[in-house]
Length: 130
Image (cartoon, rainbow, N blue to C red; front, side, top):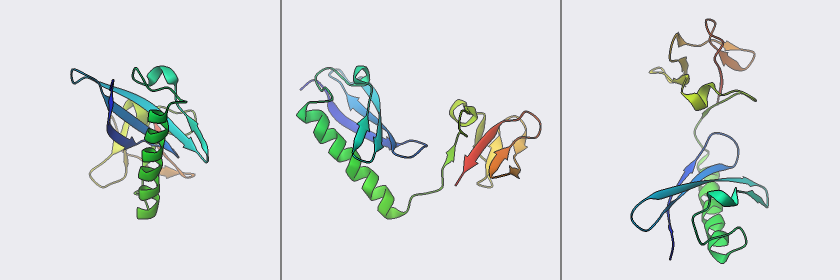
């Protein structure tokens, strides 16, 4: 076996998951899997050596990711902090959840909600939360 499934993490955004494989020698390789209904998106180059999009190993991995997603859906999910369309502030770490549990600009503090988007009045950092 060239790699084993090691970890699945839900990412911000609908149906996005980081799937980490452990390779011989203890190194890890992560592929981003996006589930959209029956469709699965993954960059084949991000998969470890061995599995391909058409392989039984990848099909089994997708089944596990779908089970993980179903369990999260059943649990109701937690609110998540995510980038606005075309934005990058959350991904870069400019916006985090503060001590009060609300979006916070790392440079300027808590952010007010402006038309369903948390926006820093000083630097313009933006995020969605919910």
